[in-house]
Image (cartoon, rainbow, N blue to C red; front, side):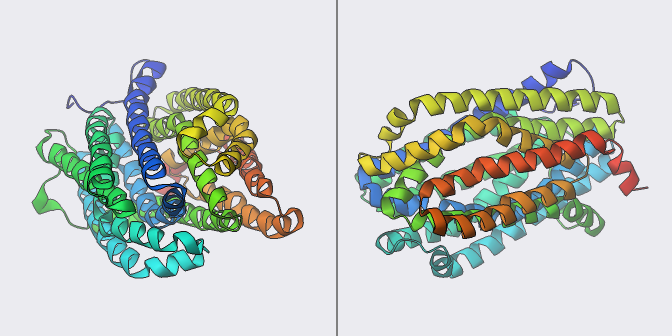
Length: 450
């Protein structure tokens, strides 16, 4: 076995999961730090208006990339399963088909994102006083989106075989580069929000190229060879089958979040700036959630591929408890320190107040967010991606939009918008928890492919 990979079908479960999750956590930490640095630099150097322009585009970015990244996650399920069962022929096809898909998806996202930027911002009711800056930022971001999609696809390959260390190294380097470029473009060259977008896409392209270089030179069975990058149609069919539910789920949730953002936009620029700053801080709560969800999907996929059913169950419970505990700890800290932390992003008292209100409503419920994402990750690793999709579409989309549609006009309070998050986290956690305990997800892959 290649030294970069980690076979999770043997050895201590806590040791394997923590060893895999630790570099993922550090990588996500650096990603969040440079996302936060973007907001800090933009907010302090360019003002709350520019911060609102960048913040207003966050849900839009997630909406566009989530479909492609979600489908690519289907490749991760296949790769982890083939790696666990040591089926090298199918592993090779899944790897190269995923790379081909990432290149095609990145190209499409670039073209449509750049052309439709004004339309997207109009749909979101972006405040008129920040619309021009938001358009400049998002158009440049989309112009370089191939790097983002490629990085996510290649990182997914490495993570599916248990390699979390190399993506961490590349992300640390590129995160630091992004901060340096932010300061240079905004502070020295006075490039405004366009400079922040340019710094981001340069860093993303470099991280994608570093991942590609690693996979080109590895001696593992998941090695990428340029001449083999093509669509294997039966493999693509499986990737889409396992990934499309996640892609649809992420996209529709993103559409619902665009509706949420539009409701926030209605409360003005200070609300957008304050809630945007809070979102950057909230991102730190996602660090253990994202780390353990990726770990859970990989662990479950590899062990079910090796028919280690009881080990898969024990690992799922351990990962869920770790994700919930870590997320809740961050939530308590955020609840207590929100007024002081938010001051780093904006000097506007009104903007800080909006951010604090959201923190005081959402932070103590991060354990429910972790449980919902963790259960979804377990089921995806087992090949049951449709169930998380149903849950997220029902609660994170339909319930969110309906709640906002009927309640915001009645209360006329932004706190109504804030409460929609813990409400839908709780509903989806209950639904997925009931399915997890009652259904035979352990043998789902064998039944689907019998």
